[in-house]
Amino acid sequence: MKRFGRVVAGLAGWMLAVCGGILFLGTAAALRRGSPHFGPDVFASAFFLAVAAAGVLVIRLAWPGQLARLAHRAAAAVTSLAAFSNPLVHGAAIYLVAVPLLAVTGEAAILVAAFCALVYAVVSPVLVSRGRRVWLNAPVSVVVGIVLIAALPATTDALAHRRFGDDWMVMLGPVMLYPVVLVAALALRLVRPPRRTPEGV
Image (tube, rainbow, N blue to C red; front, side, top):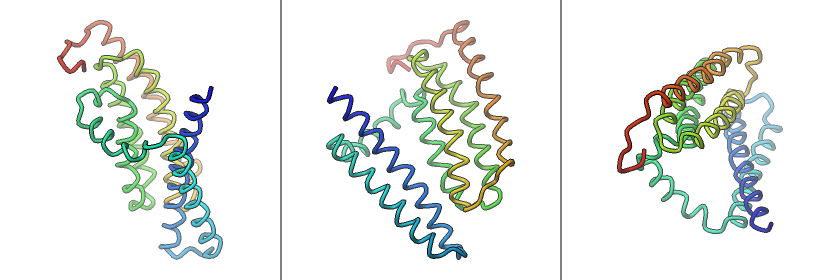
């Protein structure tokens, strides 16, 4: 039970750190553009930075040494062939590439977000279907896809300091395409299983 509590606390810490960091970047970007609400935005920036710092502190307390080992584990995961079939890597890589693009593309950021979601919708199911742990990674890919679909609009709105509103209907394309590609890739996996490799990919 104690271990479960530490896991939950660590995950909560990661959510605070990531969400606080994203919202801090959004309010900081608004300040750089000369926000008409300077005072509230300064307060919001400080608040979100404090939330992110609190998240990091929670991670350090719940998972001692986790942050210190994170860079090494991330490098090992990315350089491993098994990473190519890991939907967590797919989602993280697409999001990390998307954030700086969303920050500099202005009104076109909504198209960048939709394109990134489209890349995930096509690439992740295909790579998952060719991996070894396909029946574990497939549901994980669905969850990661849902998180990514929610995170991209929220990040875009935060960085652009505006709400695109109904324009986000453009995300329906990737949302509807993803299950089609996933089902087709899994069906192809059943018909033509991939050859085993020494790396187990």
